[in-house]
Figure 1: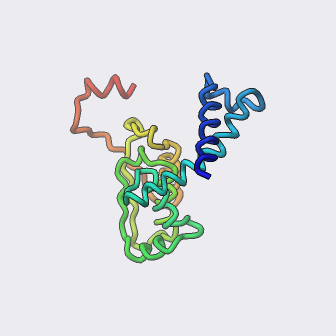
Figure 2: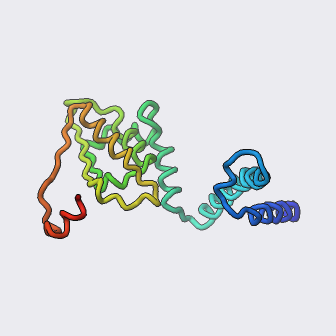
Figure 3: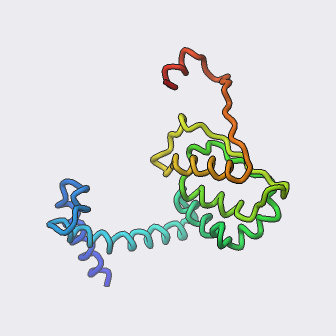
Length: 178
């Protein structure tokens, strides 16, 4: 069985190595279609192996932590046990660097605050500057930031623009903000 898996991986590796331009994989049927199909078979195996290594070594990466947290929290419409448990304990939530929030993290915020209602004494503070978003490689989603602002405004909240900056000078900031 192990020999068969090794042979299959070698075939997949050889197919992947024939692709000169990865974007060509997604242009529809053609000479790269076997590679794409091989990747569809390989990726679930790679995920299973990664999860096995995480469990064996008692480690996790940023993505695994986010996926596990998202699963535990559920959704705003169908909160998980963790979200329901935290609902009675979390009164105030501060999200700093909101401009670097990913869609998955935004869904976690929605799950945590999904049952909150105006006037119930709970507050959500989001701090962020769209001009400072630097974590696109980790899934930062400016649309999530914009949706958060819209959501806050639609539910009676306020968006405040802070115009003072104590970290830099106008001669540095003005050309960057233009």
